[in-house]
Length: 393
Image (cartoon, rainbow, N blue to C red; front, top):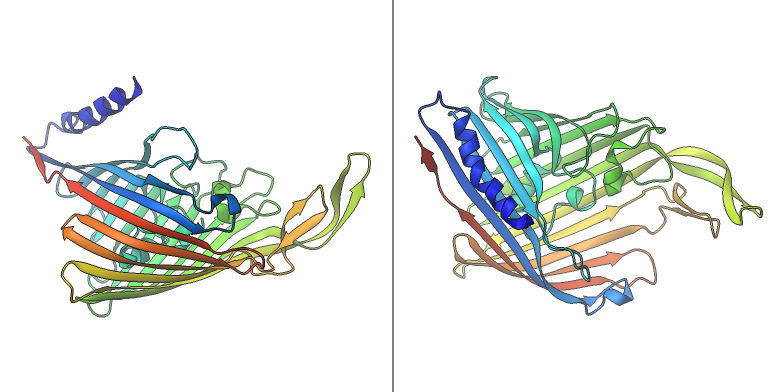
């Protein structure tokens, strides 16, 4: 009986947090959550077997417990879960997405985070996009960085109004894997808000790697190249503007995996082992880049918003930089025609404050010839709930 144990754990969490803080006169807590559910239909697909595939599915389920110990000290515990892949018989199992301490004003005008917490790579652009329930932002979608990680972070205002920053020191493996080496990922975001609604942000991260060690970011798709990297480095820029009736945003990034690709390779056939092997290579950096534009508009029609987004992503900008080798055929795969574009469009009908019904379509077009577009039509339901403050004397 695994399910009752989970509910028992969730039930005793508030008691645990309040029991260890008897010196405080009053502790407040809140329980909240979110359900993102789809009915989808694959109108067309680059994989023929997936054409006409359709299903009802949960794409995201959140259960969040927030505990306010004092005005400056808070704790968050969040579980996330989702439906299994099409055709699998796995149950919907929760996993820990957030588990952190939040301490405000230990440094004036700053907040300190420790634990599995949000990362700073794309949080600001995600908030301007506003439709994580429809799709991840471009860096998240393509595995450039995880949305949460285990480590230490400091976030705050530099001048109290216009200039803000966010420094993170994390494992680099995300929330779904343990640390695998002695190096840490450092990320820094700096942004200005010169007028209400406008944000201009720059972001950079870096993590050293030893090619002979397990690669820290190997759990992310952005790290899977021909060989181990000596370091990972990301640069990103974002600009967003939000008004009463509309929001627009644009971001662009470059990810560099140092020394993880090869140039001018030579392969020979090994008749003894009946396979090809690489005999000569030149080490090369693998660069990934992408950009995204998005917008949403509150229409004159009551309770109706229209939204759209366009992405371009190049998984390897070097046509002569190779990241894959097939031992059976002796074929090298590089960055030629590996780009794709993504178009998202939809409507957001809001019959009540926390209920969103969103018909939408997603079209992915590949640069590689011979591949059909991925076209998926969906009806998405996004529900949120909140208990409000629970006061425990």
